[in-house]
Length: 198
Image (cartoon, helix red, strand yellow):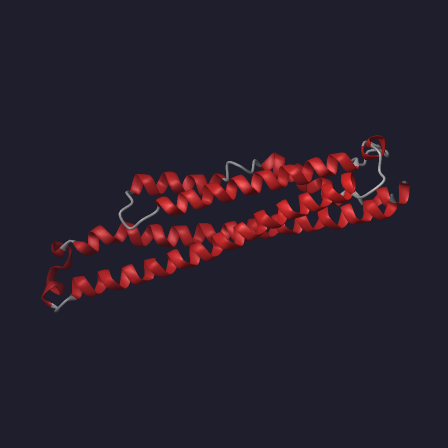
């Protein structure tokens, strides 16, 4: 049983590290989104010839500026897609950790249902930790799906109200409630003493 608990610990700890990396990626993602939104907001102004005043006599100034902004926007979109791929990798990794841990605990070991529910002091049970992994996996998979949808809706033609609504979804991360995310992460740090106690 001790060996099984050690393996569960390792996997839960790894899942916690992945959720911390997710938070870092989300900060980067929001920055990329803000940069894209700023360019999209500038495009109508740059596209209107009357906004150039005396610069209007410079050959192709409007087309050149618009072209440069569109190039920058495309580069940001590429960066956002790359960040989405990293989100996807984390979501898949959490799902794999859950699958492997479930298989190890429920399929490949001799632990009984009673042992899975064994409570030692205030420490979480193995079953509780498995539930925590399930929660982490579900939340991050749903949030990845939302982020993918949001980015697919963002185009150079997006209105400012659409951009504001999409940004709010990204900031809120509605599929990862803060209290649930913290609860799931806390359980991963509280299993170490179980190994000694069992």
